[in-house]
Amino acid sequence: MSEHAIEFLRGWIGEKVQCQHSPIKIDKQAETLAKECCAKAAEAGILLEDIQEEVGDIQELIASRLEEAAEEGGSEARPDKAAE
Image (cartoon, rainbow, N blue to C red; front, top):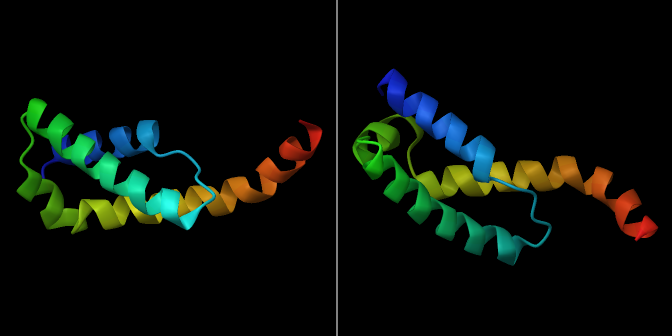
């Protein structure tokens, strides 16, 4: 994968992937974000094949990152929710 494609994907995921606590929401958000990522990559002149060559299925990668964010944010979010 080109360095440009790697930088794009890292930056995009870092900006867009936010904590979701529900598995249903994670799946739906991953699908939506994967479509958005593909569109933005195309606008940036990055071929989807270049990204998929390195990471495989973008939707699965995004879902994995969402799950990680939920696990990391879950313990931090609970005290905040109690304060609300």
